[in-house]
Length: 198
Image (cartoon, rainbow, N blue to C red; front, side, top):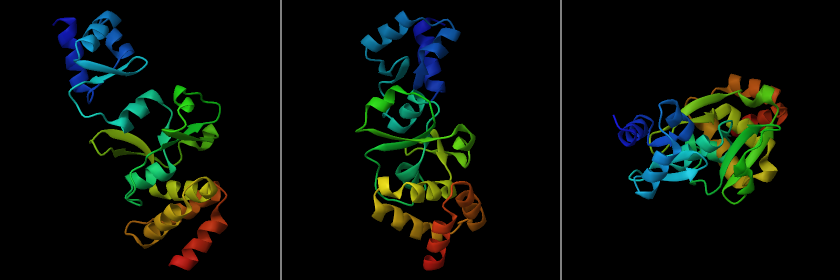
C-alpha cells in the first residue's frame, strides 16, 4: 500500500484524526502528510495533528489530542452531562499542576483549572462528543463538586441550575457526591444544597 493510501486508511481507523508520530510508526514521513495537506485531503489543526478535511471538525476531540492530560470539567462537563443546555463557547479542562500546554495562550477559547496530580483522575470517565467520538470527562458528582469549589469563576446561575437539576434528576449518586465533597473540601456547601433542594 502506498504511503498516501496508508495515511488515509489510518485516518479513517482513528475517527478522522492522525498524529504525525502515529504515522511515523508505520513508515509515513512528514513529506507525505504535507503533500496530503497541500492537496486538501487532510488539514493540519495543531503541531503534528491532522484531520480528515472532508469530515466535520470535532473541536472537543481535537482539543483533547492537543492537550493529552486535559479532562473536560466545570461548565463543559455540565454540558456533556445534560446539566446545562448552553453550548460551551469556552472549553474548560482540568490539568495537573505544573503541566504545560500550548493551548494556555488561547484564553478566549480555553479555560484551564489546575489540580494536584493525586486528585486529577478522581471521577474520570469517557463520554461521547456530539460527533460520536470518545472524550475524557469528569463524572457528574466530580463536576458538581468542581463547580461549587470554583463558582466565583463560573456563571453562578448556570451552576445553581445545574446543581438543582442534578439533585432532582435520576441517577444522582449522593453517597459518591458526599465522598467527593469530602475530598475536595466542599462537604458543607454540598450538604446545604442537598437540604435546600431535596
